Length: 259
Image (cartoon, rainbow, N blue to C red):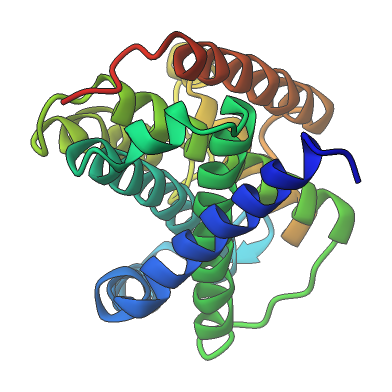
């Protein structure tokens, strides 16, 4: 192993271990709340309201919304983990020690991103297990399901990183989730099919990136989708590459590394 590669591998393992240790140590704040929230969604929307709505897309309403709710939990937790963790490192000045160390900026970025992805996936698994108490799930296409959920968690981990870089105080890390992420998620086809919308609003909805992620994941689970899966996956792959390169550039430039 080369003298340059080994320090970066050690640094990557350390960052990932620290990230996992951080959100598992405070699990009542990181893992329990989304589980409780999703159970409430299952009970209120799936059972109570779902009985009045009936079937959607050939499935019960509960079956239809479960993939969207799983994806919602993955999105919010992967984003939230990176934005809070990286901004915390900025606030404590510990990120400056990493920046002056012989560790590649790519190693730092990958480490924080993996931490966000792991938290998103862990919460997604918890929500999936809880959903089995309310409905039956049968995975239609395992490969698509895994690919979509990993890409989605990666994309929102990188977006969380960008938010953390430009944040100047703790209030700044809640603005995007509140005013951008939440509306996009609720309007992203989690609770409904866009075929119920008028043609104009169906076209407008296609500009929402979350819609493509939710529908691609729903296709992996149920085998139904409002959009073309190939287009959705291509979009996510391109978005991952573009966001990664943008984040790496920010890290190399050192922009926003001080609060």
